[in-house]
Image (cartoon, rainbow, N blue to C red; front, side, top):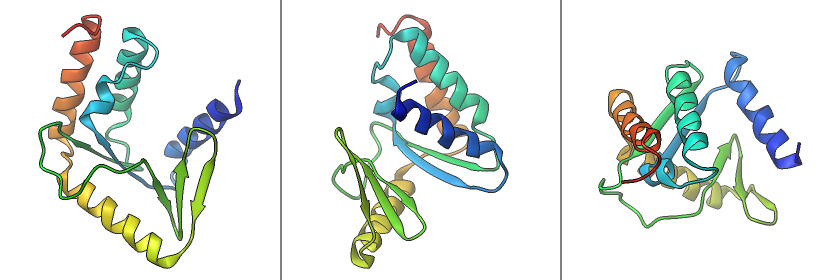
Length: 137
């Protein structure tokens, strides 16, 4: 198993350990970016739907047409007093307080634009139906 896959699998395990909390925001477009084919995409969305109500997971999805109070940015994750950026060739850890504050503000704006609960579930089911039909719109 490649190292990147192993790291992602380890991160997924902590969803069930009861000691961690993850707040995730993603764009609806991510549900339609074909990585692995229609079957893989449908399985991934099924997994998200299964885990959506976990107490350790707060998932928000920004609808494609939602107004967002900022320009699109690179993906990032916040962990305490660190920001992690995953790049194609490496990862970057940011600890500068001013940079942390900017990323926290960005996350807040993205989170404010996201649908949660039933709204997120509807977007997931719409994407799941798309992939169940073979990914043809």
